[in-house]
Image 1 (cartoon, protein in one colour):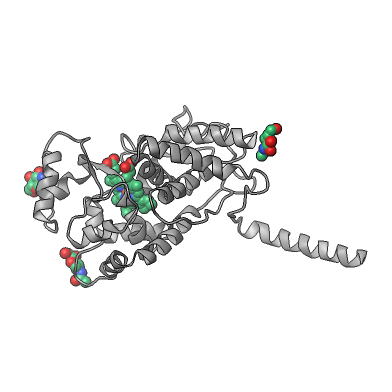
Image 2 (cartoon, protein in one colour):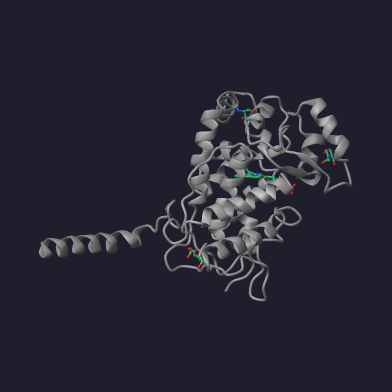
Amino acid sequence: MAALQSLLVCIVVAVSITVIPTSAQLSADFYNKVCPQALPAIRAVVKQAIFREPRIGASLLRLHFHDCFVNGCDGSILLDDTPSFTGEKTVLPNVNSVRGFDVIDDIKKAVDKACNRSLVSCADILAVAARDSVFLLDGPLYQVPLGRRDARTASLNDANRNLPPPFFNFPELLSNFQAHGLDLTDLVVLSAAHTIGLARCTTFRVRIYNDTNIDPSFAASAQQNCPSSGGNDNTLPLDATTRRFDTVYFNSLLKQKGLLHSDQELFKNNGTDSDKLVFKYSRNPFAFARDFSASMIKMGNLKPLTGNDGEVRLNCRKIN
Ligand code: HEM
Ligand SMILES: *[C@@H]1O[C@H](CO)[C@@H](O)[C@H](O)[C@H]1NC(C)=O
Ligand SMILES: *[C@@H]1O[C@H](CO)[C@@H](O)[C@H](O)[C@H]1NC(C)=O
Ligand SMILES: *[C@@H]1O[C@H](CO)[C@@H](O)[C@H](O)[C@H]1NC(C)=O
């Protein structure tokens, strides 16, 4: 019996030695034993923040995306500039644009209090806050794999190279996603995150004045809020139901009412695979909910730091 046990121990040890280095995996139950209060604490702060300001759900979802696309989901977007590096906050797609940092600070305080110590990484907080925002705005609920650790550096240049701008055309969008290990389906379903939130005039001005594949009355009405010069920070909703995580985004693309040039690039009505996906999700909210969840998990798994790499930050804005 003892011999059998030690044989089993040997097998278990051998398996874990061979398994651990090959791929450090995230797991949905990472905090379940060590701090079962962690995820409810995050949910409570997100819920309160959305109650105060519905748009914040969109902002939290976008923070996770912009974190993951720059050297993986490692909380790097949260770091303030330091003498030794310029972080990601001032890169063009982020400056005056990404928001929600104060909510992330509130979550970090609440979750550290609930766990009696600094246990949950800022990168995991971003992933859970994004998930909870989608769910609280009537979108799907999925299990988030956890166990990410936080980066000890950030890079403005890497943010510049990796975040897709709204003037990208379809091939540029697809190759940007492919460079992150994501495919056409991921591009189409994740772009539908634009079912919630707002965009500034400066990000869609060229589209509403100069694109031809745009509904004329939609363009005229957007121009009311976004003059051909000035008013850069005026905002418009990214779809008509900006507080609800639904499939109206896809219906808008079918009607040439995508607000961003990059949105309408996904639907040209000439029989591409991208067109077909937009058609499919506009008609099938269940397929959208399922595929969006899967793509969020895929995006959330981009190059996480795990094991002893990185750290668990005490303050999401700076390294320990
Ligand atoms: C496909 C390439 C994408 C491009 C070119 C793009 C571009 C943009 C732009 C220009 C804005 C408006 C920013 C501003 O006005 O300051 C925006 C907003 C937003 N984006 Fe994207 N995006 C893309 C993909 C994604 C993805 C994959 C997600 C999440 C999974 C996402 C989530 C959001 C959300 C939720 C907002 C609204 C934020 C708020 O209201 O605070 N986007 N995006
Ligand atoms: C934190 O401390 C409180 C009070 O001592 C205790 O009830 C709770 O179980 C602790 N939580 C964790 C995750 O250790
Ligand atoms: C639209 O195109 C015209 C002609 O190329 C250009 O002069 C104008 O500045 C463009 N408008 C915007 C808002 O980009
Ligand atoms: C669809 O139309 C766009 C321009 O509107 C063009 O660039 C693209 O090649 C077309 N695709 C097909 C399959 O016809």
